[in-house]
Length: 109
Image 1 (cartoon, rainbow, N blue to C red):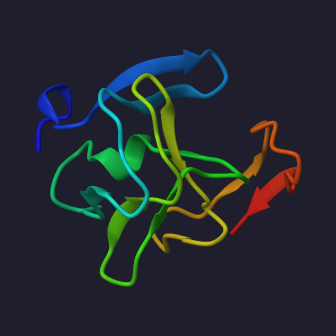
Image 2 (cartoon, rainbow, N blue to C red):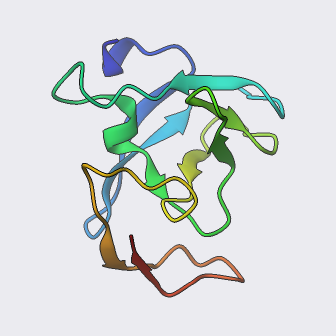
């Protein structure tokens, strides 16, 4: 999958601290698939660029498909919770600045 030609999202710069993220180019309805977790097949896959949020708008199902857990509008950053879906190859340890009301403050998985 080429990230510049992905269906439904594109890569944009978030800010200097976060770097880049993926942003919806169309509406995703609740339960709609966004992409399948594919960590190893390319140097830069969507999962590598999907940022954490303590109040995410997407989550991985048991089959490894990232699905919308609430409506995602065009232009909205697509996020998932790294704590709920840790990746063994990518241990996380960083200060969380997601701004969610229930932000954990520090992600350490």
